[in-house]
Length: 477
Ligand SMILES: *Cc1c(COP(=O)(O)O)cnc(C)c1O
Image (cartoon, rainbow, N blue to C red; front, side, top):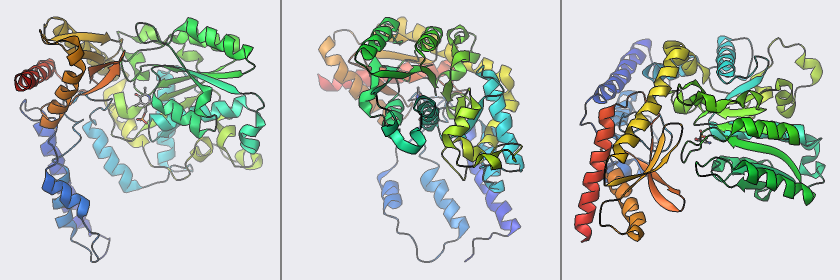
């Protein structure tokens, strides 16, 4: 057994793999195709309990296993009827890009090879879209969590003198970082990982639209200063994961300037909403952010994984991570990405973005993102017009929270009913949708970041939910 494949074998297996994916693609246009199929018990057992073979196996047989045991049981996000979390389908061209990137197999730590320049090009495009200067720093990451971690690591380096040498011992005061009560959990993870400790993170209350309450933020900063604590940073959300709320970025920017705080934006889901016709005015202030996290593997429709961190001051970003002595830095026309982040060896994530961004263009993204928001509005309209559902949140982007509220079911039973409904519908797989807790109530949450979703899929979603809900009610009487 050898790892090498002859060019003929490689070609043959490659075509088989592409054929299998093309078949899945074709299925998405059929209205009856389920969003996902539950993994059957025997398949799960087969995968779990598989012993690593002592002897090698034929590549053909192994690919066959993938076709029978893996491909048929996806998470479901390539389907037009997937509404869960924030997961988009992969643009087909970007799937080919993943294959090609693996084929070239560079480490994009830096250096003079094409992949490095492709990443720089993509970062420049993203900076332009996000109203960051061309001189700003940036890096592609595994996702939004790491992009937020990188932004906050640069903040820590700028705000706490000598932190790289001394760690948090370099700071004599208790520091404070602010985010909203709707801020993503990865912010707390980053705060903990960076050694601040979770007690230094304040979750500021939100207003009726789930946006950070500016008065509460001002009061909290004042209080912290009065107690001799040191505020250093505000993390604003440009699209919360629960409702898509966008914090008042321009007011936060002004406050950060006044108070000398670092202004970081978590735009993992919503930053690219800046391209939408409906919400672009809500992003005023983003041009003043010190750092920004976004997630191309969400609303830019490239396959997982691909996040991005942008930092206005590229020098600060480099100083936060680089271990290269200054005399070596000057020799490099283009500094290495390894000096701007956590990883040394880095994958060629840029190729998929480079292809899809050119395939669709800025205008294509503008239209596609605006259409997703339009679909969310159409879903809300349908919910408003029905007696058995109630709209709970209608944020500025493409997330809608609602409840199943059939007549004659008392309020105190609705949390349980909605939880059971979600579980049942997820199990059956015709659509895939998840929920969240909002104002202490269980809600159903539909997120549309999907270039395949049509209006008919919205009708189907509500039909599936209402039908399953009726079944639950008749079983429970
Ligand atoms: C998805 C998301 C994150 C985390 O990003 P990952 O890519 O999952 O690591 C952070 N914040 C928001 C608002 C998100 O939607």
